[in-house]
Amino acid sequence: MTLDQFIAQYDFPGSIILLEGKRIVPLEDQAHLKALGQVLAQKMQYATFRSGNANGADLYFSQGVAAINSQKLEVFIPFDGHRSKSNLAGHTLSLDQIDLSSYPDIVTLSALNKKTKDLLKRYLDGERNRFTDKVAFIIRDTIKVMGVQGHPAISFAIFYDDLSMPKTGGTGHTMEVCVQCQVPYIDQSIWGKWLSET
Image (cartoon, rainbow, N blue to C red; front, side, top):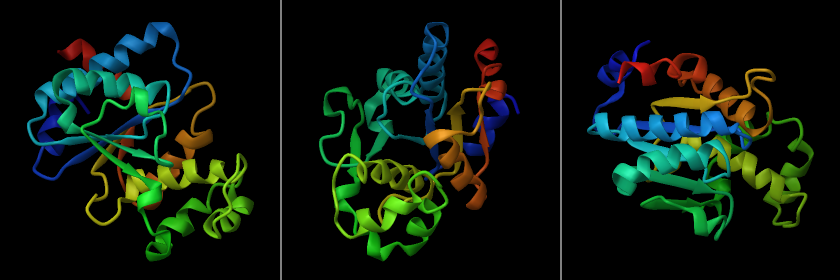
């Protein structure tokens, strides 16, 4: 898929593109993520861009989009105030605003993450500490794909992954949610070629 093909297929009213990935981004890649966010925000007339406001890939993608138009960027955060100083988005949704009992499918898909599965019930029962907070990040990752009322599901996802250990951690969980929800996605092995097309 070329950049032009991607834009032709996914730039439509209501389209939401997820931009996210690993927290560790080598210096030589940081500018590429910013550039992609900028190019997409410039060239896509209708699409909105969604991120998780994490450090690393989320931040660099978001910096690119916000440099063009911060109103085209929305972030989903695991709890109120999360990394508020680095939040560049025009729109923010916190997990604290969501009644998860209304979204059993989100809970079910969040339980796919083996590292936090045992903590999920404790989190849903209201327990908040540094252990159960890990669940909030996984649920946030699930919601980024599936959406909630007023925030539709994404149309497509663009990831920055660690290609030496692909599909691991929170990024891997988000990719798996995309698979379960039949949302197409790519990583930098595809979009890395797009920048040379601009």
